[in-house]
Length: 156
Ligand SMILES: [Zn+2]
Image (cartoon, protein in one colour):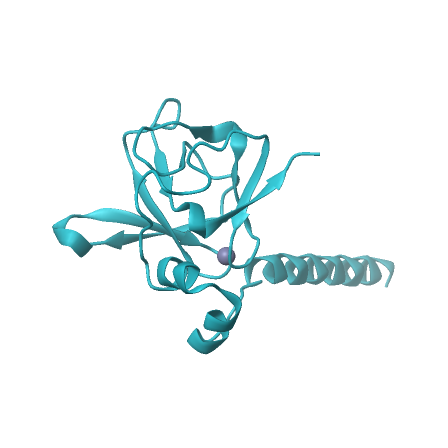
Protein backbone atom coordinates (compact mmCIF):
# COMPACT_ATOMS: atom_id res chain seq x y z
CA UNK A 1 0.00 0.00 0.00
CA UNK A 2 2.80 2.38 0.95
CA UNK A 3 4.60 1.61 -2.31
CA UNK A 4 1.45 2.26 -4.28
CA UNK A 5 1.16 5.67 -2.62
CA UNK A 6 4.75 6.56 -3.50
CA UNK A 7 4.17 5.47 -7.08
CA UNK A 8 1.04 7.59 -7.28
CA UNK A 9 2.88 10.64 -5.95
CA UNK A 10 5.66 10.07 -8.47
CA UNK A 11 3.17 9.74 -11.31
CA UNK A 12 1.45 12.97 -10.30
CA UNK A 13 4.81 14.75 -10.11
CA UNK A 14 5.77 13.50 -13.58
CA UNK A 15 2.47 14.62 -15.06
CA UNK A 16 2.83 18.02 -13.40
CA UNK A 17 6.31 18.43 -14.87
CA UNK A 18 5.14 17.37 -18.32
CA UNK A 19 2.29 19.83 -18.11
CA UNK A 20 4.73 22.65 -17.37
CA UNK A 21 7.09 21.60 -20.17
CA UNK A 22 4.35 21.50 -22.75
CA UNK A 23 3.08 24.89 -21.69
CA UNK A 24 6.47 26.44 -22.43
CA UNK A 25 6.73 24.61 -25.76
CA UNK A 26 3.28 25.63 -27.01
CA UNK A 27 3.25 29.20 -25.75
CA UNK A 28 2.70 30.71 -29.17
CA UNK A 29 1.27 34.03 -30.25
CA UNK A 30 -1.49 33.73 -32.84
CA UNK A 31 -2.98 36.82 -34.46
CA UNK A 32 -4.88 37.33 -37.70
CA UNK A 33 -3.47 39.56 -40.46
CA UNK A 34 -5.95 42.28 -39.42
CA UNK A 35 -4.85 42.06 -35.78
CA UNK A 36 -1.18 42.31 -36.75
CA UNK A 37 -1.94 45.32 -38.92
CA UNK A 38 -3.42 47.18 -35.97
CA UNK A 39 -0.44 46.59 -33.68
CA UNK A 40 2.42 47.01 -36.17
CA UNK A 41 3.43 49.99 -38.31
CA UNK A 42 3.02 49.43 -42.09
CA UNK A 43 6.81 49.01 -42.44
CA UNK A 44 6.94 46.51 -39.54
CA UNK A 45 4.03 44.61 -41.07
CA UNK A 46 5.72 44.48 -44.48
CA UNK A 47 8.91 42.99 -43.01
CA UNK A 48 7.67 40.89 -40.09
CA UNK A 49 4.51 39.43 -41.64
CA UNK A 50 5.25 39.62 -45.38
CA UNK A 51 8.95 38.66 -45.27
CA UNK A 52 10.17 42.02 -46.49
CA UNK A 53 13.71 43.36 -46.14
CA UNK A 54 14.73 46.81 -44.94
CA UNK A 55 17.25 48.71 -47.05
CA UNK A 56 20.85 47.87 -46.17
CA UNK A 57 22.70 50.33 -43.88
CA UNK A 58 19.44 52.06 -42.84
CA UNK A 59 18.38 50.05 -39.79
CA UNK A 60 18.45 51.53 -36.28
CA UNK A 61 20.45 48.61 -34.84
CA UNK A 62 23.11 48.26 -37.53
CA UNK A 63 25.70 50.26 -35.56
CA UNK A 64 24.07 49.70 -32.18
CA UNK A 65 26.65 48.63 -29.56
CA UNK A 66 24.95 48.73 -26.14
CA UNK A 67 24.91 45.69 -23.83
CA UNK A 68 21.60 43.88 -23.58
CA UNK A 69 19.22 41.58 -25.38
CA UNK A 70 17.49 41.96 -28.72
CA UNK A 71 13.84 40.86 -28.66
CA UNK A 72 11.19 40.22 -31.30
CA UNK A 73 9.50 43.52 -32.25
CA UNK A 74 6.15 41.75 -32.58
CA UNK A 75 5.99 39.59 -29.42
CA UNK A 76 9.05 40.44 -27.24
CA UNK A 77 10.51 36.93 -27.48
CA UNK A 78 14.24 37.15 -26.56
CA UNK A 79 16.25 36.35 -29.70
CA UNK A 80 19.85 37.57 -29.52
CA UNK A 81 22.39 38.78 -26.96
CA UNK A 82 24.60 41.80 -27.70
CA UNK A 83 27.52 39.45 -26.86
CA UNK A 84 27.10 37.67 -30.21
CA UNK A 85 26.53 40.85 -32.29
CA UNK A 86 29.31 41.73 -34.70
CA UNK A 87 29.90 44.01 -37.68
CA UNK A 88 29.60 41.84 -40.77
CA UNK A 89 29.76 44.78 -43.20
CA UNK A 90 26.52 43.52 -44.77
CA UNK A 91 24.40 46.54 -43.84
CA UNK A 92 22.16 44.62 -41.45
CA UNK A 93 22.59 43.74 -37.75
CA UNK A 94 24.47 40.45 -37.61
CA UNK A 95 24.76 37.88 -34.84
CA UNK A 96 26.86 34.73 -34.62
CA UNK A 97 24.31 32.80 -32.51
CA UNK A 98 20.75 32.81 -31.20
CA UNK A 99 20.32 33.64 -27.49
CA UNK A 100 19.05 30.10 -26.79
CA UNK A 101 17.81 27.01 -28.56
CA UNK A 102 14.15 27.02 -29.50
CA UNK A 103 13.86 30.83 -29.76
CA UNK A 104 14.28 30.93 -33.54
CA UNK A 105 12.91 28.65 -36.23
CA UNK A 106 14.48 27.94 -39.60
CA UNK A 107 12.99 27.29 -43.02
CA UNK A 108 14.36 26.84 -46.55
CA UNK A 109 13.66 29.89 -48.70
CA UNK A 110 13.95 29.57 -52.49
CA UNK A 111 12.90 33.13 -53.35
CA UNK A 112 15.06 35.47 -55.46
CA UNK A 113 16.46 32.47 -57.35
CA UNK A 114 18.73 31.31 -54.53
CA UNK A 115 18.54 28.87 -51.68
CA UNK A 116 18.68 30.63 -48.33
CA UNK A 117 17.62 29.76 -44.81
CA UNK A 118 14.90 32.04 -43.53
CA UNK A 119 14.89 32.71 -39.78
CA UNK A 120 11.70 33.56 -37.94
CA UNK A 121 10.52 34.02 -34.36
CA UNK A 122 9.56 30.67 -32.82
CA UNK A 123 6.87 32.33 -30.71
CA UNK A 124 4.91 34.42 -33.25
CA UNK A 125 6.32 33.26 -36.64
CA UNK A 126 7.44 36.76 -37.58
CA UNK A 127 10.11 37.01 -40.27
CA UNK A 128 13.51 38.10 -38.90
CA UNK A 129 15.97 37.69 -41.76
CA UNK A 130 18.25 34.94 -43.06
CA UNK A 131 20.99 32.65 -41.78
CA UNK A 132 24.31 32.31 -43.64
CA UNK A 133 27.41 30.17 -43.15
CA UNK A 134 30.00 32.96 -43.35
CA UNK A 135 29.97 34.09 -39.70
CA UNK A 136 32.88 34.23 -37.23
CA UNK A 137 34.11 31.22 -35.29
CA UNK A 138 33.24 29.27 -33.20
CA UNK A 139 29.74 29.04 -34.74
CA UNK A 140 30.60 30.11 -38.31
CA UNK A 141 27.03 31.43 -38.53
CA UNK A 142 25.71 34.84 -39.55
CA UNK A 143 22.18 35.64 -38.44
CA UNK A 144 21.39 38.54 -40.76
CA UNK A 145 18.44 40.36 -39.20
CA UNK A 146 16.27 43.38 -40.06
CA UNK A 147 16.49 46.10 -37.38
CA UNK A 148 12.74 46.54 -37.79
CA UNK A 149 12.21 42.95 -36.64
CA UNK A 150 13.96 43.79 -33.36
CA UNK A 151 13.54 45.78 -30.19
CA UNK A 152 16.22 46.17 -27.54
CA UNK A 153 16.31 45.58 -23.78
CA UNK A 154 19.29 47.38 -22.29
CA UNK A 155 21.22 45.41 -19.65
CA UNK A 156 20.64 46.78 -16.14
ZN1 LIG B 1 7.90 37.07 -32.11
